Length: 82
Image 1 (tube, rainbow, N blue to C red):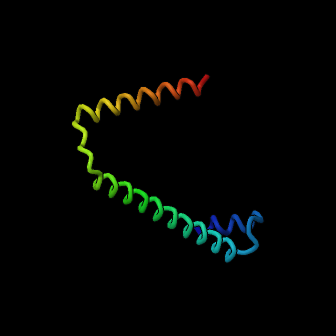
Image 2: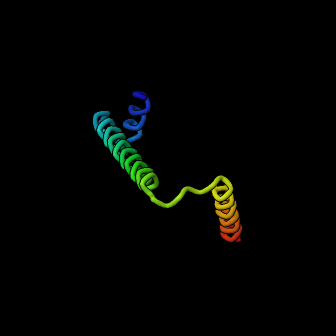
Image 3: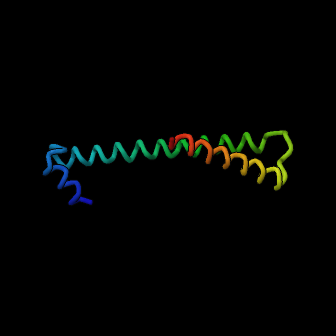
């Protein structure tokens, strides 16, 4: 990893290894924040689903819904390829 950083400095992408490291840490911090936001959004969706008073779908209903969804995806994919 250090060699990769040195290579970017030698290529002129950064003035110093410290600058490259600071950039790498900023990217890492941003990624961690985005990951946390995604996890929180998933937790909220799960919570809403668990709290939903509507009855659950049967296995057959869920499978039929998934089949309709997949057919719609295939149709959209064919239309996009035109």
